Picture 1 (tube, helix red, strand yellow):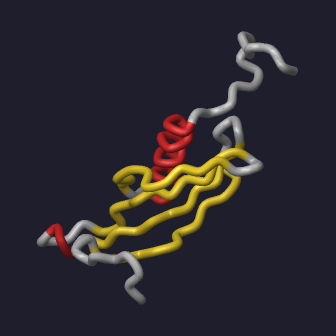
Picture 2 (picture 1 turned 90 degrees about the vertical axis):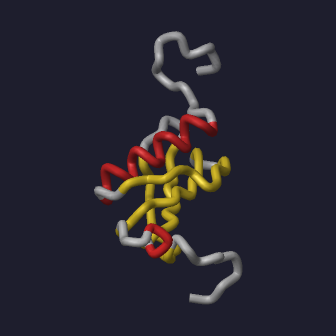
Picture 3 (picture 1 turned 30 degrees about the vertical axis):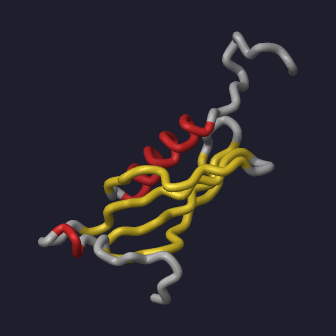
Length: 99
């Protein structure tokens, strides 16, 4: 199967498509609002995408609870796995900080 895929049987996702699909899947699975993809990397199975999610809106917005989810998709965009790897408040500077 090495054709151009005109029949639509197998069309590999591009990185932007994988990021959009991962955000859509997280919204559907968690009921939370995805902010956007913060990383996209190819894997042997397809794509690994880290999606930033608004978990709990608070006032002021700098105290919103945010999270990063890792979403693994196959080459067709089907969900293989997801998990939350980090939760933090929006106002945290974050990088390297212990929780």
